[in-house]
Image (cartoon, rainbow, N blue to C red):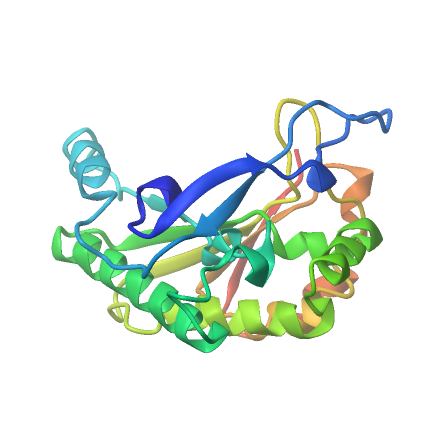
Length: 229
């Protein structure tokens, strides 16, 4: 999805975020750096064909999943965003939000009423190694997580009232390897009551996920689905 956004290219792997196995060794897999090389524009719906295929194949409610806009920024940060295209970070956030608003609107025009955002980096803020990485590339982890929460809200701000929106917080699990270890306690107060979604999907299927205390930060009206198996 991200590689198809005009203005964005996928670059080299970010070795600082290499996934680990349960034994603590490196897995050999690392997410790739995303570079913004020119202005981001929504020229066509990237997932329209996917939705149309899915909707035609089921009588149930089809769900479309979008990668979180945070994935466009985290691996590389401001240094990987063209200053010629975006002299200020605020202009970048604005164009990213507009892109997602237009993609969501295009899906809604096709009848899509269930959209999920998969976020693979918000939980990185729980990990000291990843926080140190952000400092090295010139980002402030304490303020950046708030910027991300507001970015997600901006991206979904214009959705239809009857569109159900969910957010899945991923801990970077892939091929029996992972990135982040730690409970949701420091993440919960700045994300759970702030992001404007209808449902939260939270991983709770191993000891790395911590206890259920942070669920107390989920405000009334939100659904929560716990991955316990």
